[in-house]
Image 1 (tube, rainbow, N blue to C red):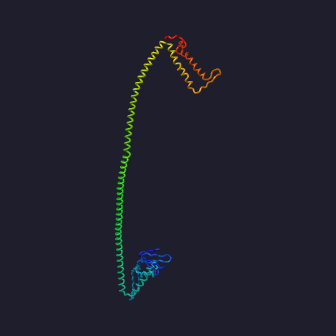
Image 2 (tube, rainbow, N blue to C red):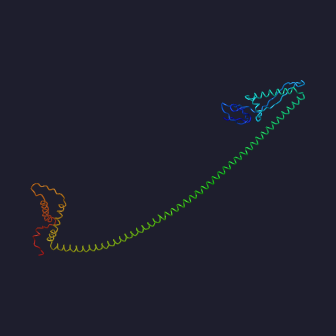
Length: 355
């Protein structure tokens, strides 16, 4: 698997296929699990207060010296990094600082022991100057870092503004493109609508030419035919009415003539009745007897089935029916005498007045 480290530390990979061990300062490395091992060592700067109390100089003068030392492992120098790994690998940052402090204190004591007082003062002034110089360098580094941070903020701000402006411009461009697309779609839709309207107009004209106009012509023809039939019916009705009128007048004339003839006949009959009196009445009755006999026998002739019941002492059959009709006819003179007071049998035996 991959392992990474920051710029303030180094990694040392040892084991399978790693002889000599591989040292990486601020980077990444692939490590095979179980067969390879990874170790880390700090590359931070260590600030140490090196104190030497009552150290005797070359002339036997005791002096106390306090120095400040900054210790750092150079990760980019492979030889120094290899030496540091041999000395400090597996130790914490505090343990490394303690080892370096003890080493520096020993060197400082050895130096002081070979110096005179003047050299010890010069060394102190040198150390003080170096300390001041380092403080100034630290201040300068701080100012640099602050300014660099400010510059970085400004640069990043400008960069972000530039990126935002770019993104905004891209968004505006996309929006404009979308708007143009919408406009194109609107134009295309408008053209489609126009084409559809033209097609509708064309179809309407075609429909009008193929269907509407022939239908109107047929309607007009049928209306003319209906009007002609109506006029013909009116003319026929008027002709029939005229014929009926003429026929009515003819019938009225015929009825009038018939009425006059019947009136004349009735007058003659009345005159004859006055002249003949009873004889005329008998003559008229005798003329009507056959009609009366026909009317009397009509119910019998219309009967489909006749059931006759005999008590044993009378006739049964067609003779019985004929006898019934004759019996009715023989009773007619009695009926006429009761109605008119004229005895037909006596009038018939009287001599005729016309003789």
